[in-house]
Image (tube, rainbow, N blue to C red; front, side):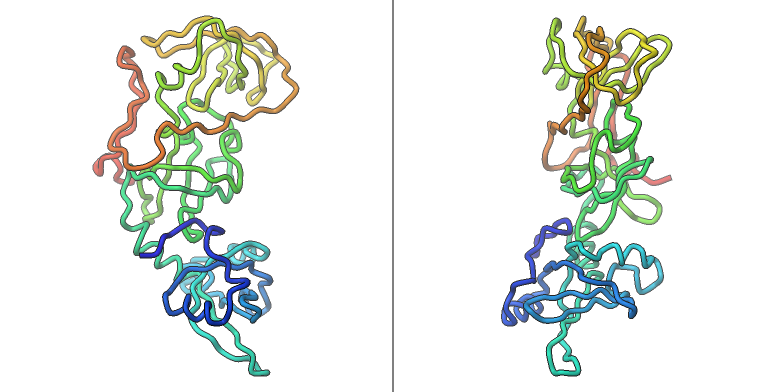
Length: 310
């Protein structure tokens, strides 16, 4: 069975010989090449193995033949590696070979043989392709898109998905559920550690880098790890996203609270915490962020009944 990957992670067809291309076509192997143009005939043009190749609009994405895919989604492939299977070979007016390619068929294969077998709670690799204020769109295989909502990016509150991920970043996600159209909705916070797992990396008396997440009348929430924030004094001159240094005054597992004191209000450099995964593979049935002592419950239930889209 073919291993399905995110787009840009397949074997390049650019330098394959005609014999290798014929074998790949016979085996329905997914290859990739850089799209060179989107022409007036509404087709993507490529060059593979020293020969021309074309991908008609209807073959540029699953759903394109029904009008569910807009031109902009196709023309933005120009200059980017694009996956496909070879559907056949024609000849041009000079007798030279022209390969016919289909990204849509590669996506249908990926869905049927890989994605359709996944369920809520399964962990899978993704690549961030686009960021919006409400979340990040991720490639989960062959350019098939899924949404990672902003509120699923961490337990700590963030202002923008760009606070947590960037375009082109390879990340791990968990399938949260499917939307009414059957598309995956993703989450990542369950992989970034519980309160106790994150708090174990810190000690009372340390001074560490933090990122301001919100400023309230009663205090300033400062993130010190992607899934962990503490409360410092209220400072009206701070803004969300600002890097500061904080002194850890106290760690209270029973209340899931970390008391902080802001030491330096004006760190000059921008800062974003690297993602640290506490779980990297397999399946989750249930995840509990809260400590056993805390009455506050933060958890995720991946059971089928809990994941029915509404």
